[in-house]
Image 1 (tube, rainbow, N blue to C red):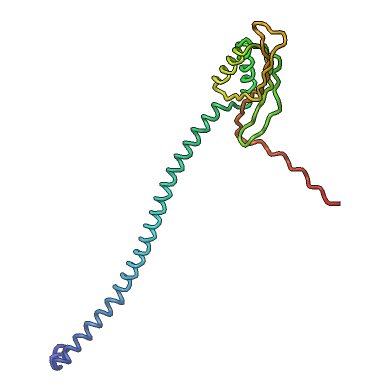
Image 2: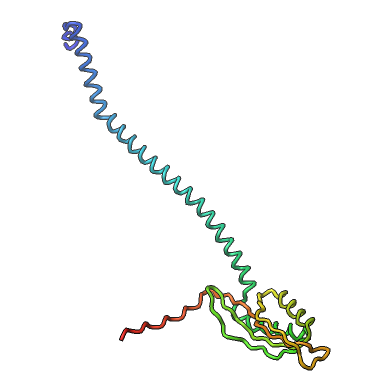
Length: 201
């Protein structure tokens, strides 16, 4: 019946009917399949771009993490070196005894060996020792050389040398100095509390 009705139409009518049918099929296809497929593709594209952006950000973070790990390893190595040079506080008495022993080994007569007040710094403490000895220039130089060879850092400052009034072969000079060792502290010492401000009268 439909075929007979279609054949009865003119050529233009048949073409129009075919176009209408094709449009109907295309519309149904778009409505039931293509629109959803297009939306799904757009959603996947957006998701893909977001994932790619996240991957790039993670790659940058990974590169920074490796750099950070290298910096941490370098700082840890420096810290170990620092700890070898700066003894912990519990080793300081032994170090002081070593300094005394080095003075005696250098044929110096120890007149004074007095620890002074500890000075707090950012991550270490200064432990100064007031040292006074009597001997010769050669023995004093030998003493300083032996101190410089210690694995622990000991700084000698405020050196003052005077001539012994009654000299002997083993005693021609008196020398005083401040021998300072530096102690590493894991936790910086607390800063002194600020004095309360005085109110105006």
